[in-house]
Image 1 (tube, rainbow, N blue to C red):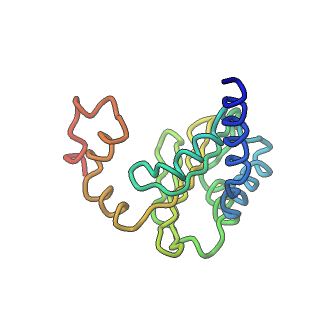
Image 2 (cartoon, rainbow, N blue to C red):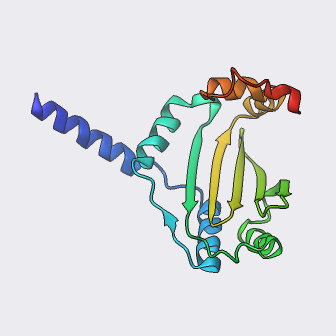
Length: 172
């Protein structure tokens, strides 16, 4: 029995190791943020396993997922204009800007997209105070269109706890 468990874990470890590394564009954005602000991405335990599960199970149509979290970004950063330059330099030209939002309280969010064969890749970069995140995912265009038509339904399928309390579709 123990031998079977050991073989199972070894096979799983090989599958995670054999899974292709994230998109080079995403890595460039992460490295750009790290070098500009002097921070390192925060390690997320078991995220390699999550990436493998997404690749195999494809929840809500997502075919690929990568994520970087940043903590303890210096308080005076990111200045919105400064962050604009960092993101524009790091994101290759083949990515197209989709959304750029800056709130009065200092939150900044960017969404870029590009076509990748039969899929659409989305890259979302967001900073709020001394924390930031970057996420890249790949999804078929029909699933993306479905998400955009009914964001409340997507929240429900992803297990949003507030679905029962609010109808998100009325906000759009």
